Structures are given as structure tokens and as C-alpha cells.
Length: 186
View 1 (cartoon, rainbow, N blue to C red):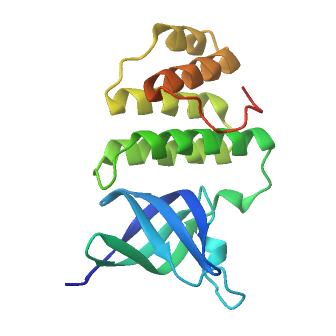
View 2 (view 1 turned 135 degrees about the vertical axis):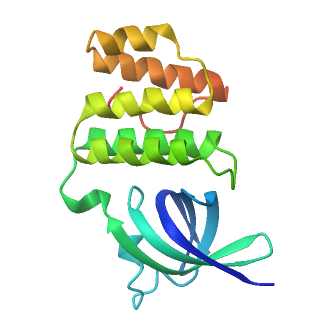
């Protein structure tokens, strides 16, 4: 039986499919991490494509039939690209979302993690690296992993580049594989 749902979510990944479709990974507060299909959004006539950028907070309507979700409507609530960004901001955003996409199980409802990702995205949009790193540290704690003392030491010393590098290395050790995000900032 078909099921409809709506809510707010962060777009953490997107992949082109077929000629005009996108596969989106959206992290939501009330559904967790979901993967959905956005049919026809890459068409010239589609008005939804501009809303569906990585880092955007969107208001969405989903149609679910069985285990599959289809995006029926979307509206941008908070676009990440509101103002021009530096390359390092994009790199850190993609880094965080790659980790979130790899580490968070599908359809696991984690409101604290949603808040961490949302706050980290907002901190990056405002070019506020200390708040971004603070949210990354909270993200690690809320996932249930112990915090490497070296990360706290660098953060307390306000050496944010070393703290970010230690966070990256820590996530790679948790995931047991190197991250694909380009290493421009770190």
C-alpha cells in the first residue's frame, strides 16, 4: 500500500541516474537517512533541480511503495549556496556528508545527529570553522564513538587545521578506509 510523508531534510548525496533522474540521499529528522528517486528533475522543464543541491535544507513530500521512496515535491528552505563560498567550505561540507552517508544506517531516526549536521552546515555557510569543528566533535560523541584526546587538545589550543586533520584521520580509522573527499583544506 502506498504511503505519503513529508518533512525537512538535508541533502547529503546525489547521483545522476538515467537521462533525467536523480538518486538523492536525504537525512531527515523524523525518517532518518533515506534514499529516494527524483524522477525527471534533470529535465529542462523541471523547477525542482535548483532545490536539490548538496547542503540544502529542503521541505519535501515523499511517496513510498514498499521499500522505495520517490520525491514528489521539494522546496528549498535554506540553500547552502545563498552566498559565494570558498573551496575549503565545499570540501569540508562534502567531507562531513561523506562520513555521515558512510556511517549512519538507513532509516535510523537520530534527531541529535540531524541537529549536528544541520548546525555544522550552518556554521560552514557562515564561514565559522570553530563552530563547525565543535559540531564535528559533537557528531562523533552522538554517534557513540569515544573522542580521541588529541582532537580535544588541538581544538582547545585553537589549532583548527590540526584538529580537522585529526578528525579526518579518526573517521578514516572508524570506517577502515580512506575517504574520497579531495584533501584541499586538510
